[in-house]
Image (tube, rainbow, N blue to C red; front, side, top):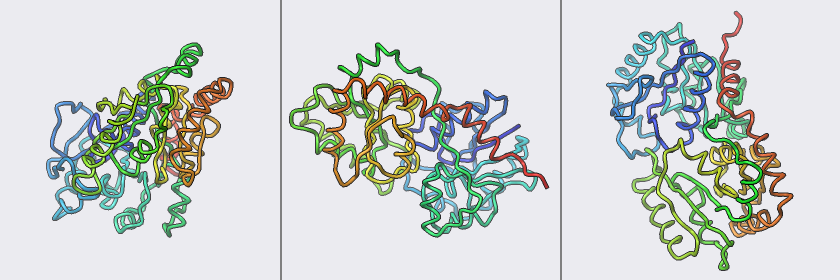
Length: 369
């Protein structure tokens, strides 16, 4: 089958959850024998591969504001026609709009013979979401049951929505038990996030214990294509660097390719998930679990269901100091630590690329007339 994912912001190494999850899903679909194509806006990149089609009718700036796409389309007709043409020329059987706006779900420019699916990665109640649903996609795929429930509470018609979890890469294996024990004893505590205030990194650093935690703390903050206000990412980076600069054993590390994230987390004693707003999925936590690294974070959104018995969740009201306390307790309790590490790998088994690809194919299969 020929499958296309439309995501205007797609880049081969974009440090954002949707892009990373779709790349892993595409790996799984290809492993199952399907052809996968990405359709994205210009400009072209030197790292573009043969399975990425760049639209000539739309070029996006970097960085850009969230949903700025619509303001860059004085008329949607040229983009609509070009996407329809690409889908026909590439003989696409199924097109998946990766978002109501950045995935063009609000336009749904599919030829009549092409099946459609709409992905929902975060809460949307705006006109673009309403328009996307009015196009009656073949199936709506929220990223978690939590997102379905939250959307329903916000007044969105979620009838027939079917949750499809994000896929995680299959690039790194969990460390051996001996290596994991050494990580428990001396390994760094790590986390990664987009440079976004909602990720809670500044609050985490501000609450760092005066006595430290007896090991390095390493944080990577990545700049993505989009931000919520001009200069947001630089503001967050500046604040976090300032806070980290006065703390012992705390480093803000350079950005790494997203393909290396799983390996980075595999070499951590614990992965932190300090987002102060509910995560509709939780990519960093999922990738940590996949390599046996326990997760400590706030019990918000989908994170408690994702982590399960493979980490420690605390109430947001307890504050970031409680996160550091859980880290100390866990690394000092070898039996509990290793039980969580073993569970982590089991917890992430259904998130491997081929597993998620199989679920995707089942959910998007044609229905009988």
